[in-house]
Amino acid sequence: MDSITDESVVRLIKQLVDHYKTNISNRFIRPVLLQIQFDDVLWNQIESLTERFDQLGYQGYDIEELYRQIYALTQFVDAVRREVAPTLRYRIGNNYTDKTDKVLRDMTIHNFSSNLQVFAGLIFELYTKLVELDTEAAKGKRKGPVYKQHTELNDIEEKLMPTNNK
Image 1: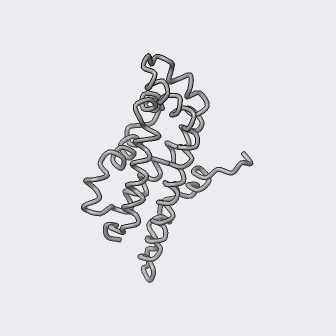
Image 2: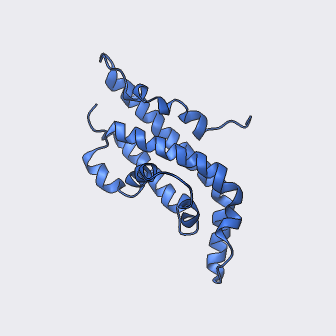
Image 3: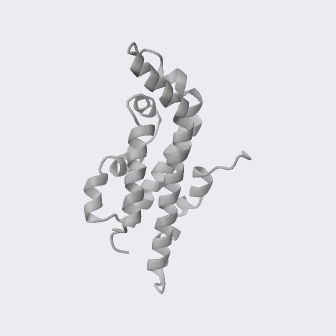
């Protein structure tokens, strides 16, 4: 499959990146997120999408690379849910003297879990759109869709959209 330039994919990526920068990896939470023990490859995948979005968009997106980035973001969301969200208030601390900063920090903490769920939903929406485009492009081809060649993607929905039965 050639580069993906589908407008809906580009729009979804932009929305995902904007949400990440504003609500997930903002100035209050980023120091805590950087404490998560991921290997450099995973962090690089996350940063290549979230920090270099504009550069990549002009050339189109490589579908294999997008699947790797979605996998990395899924691992990120899963780890943040387990390791960060339950103790975020205590890990950020209370060393803000400016009242505006304190209010913003409190709002960030209070809304973090729901913002993380929105982020997970955006990742899943991007994944399903890619699968749809990938499947359509693979029709009549022997190799089949790219996503089926990556077994690590098999539990994406389960990790991003967990049920309340856990």
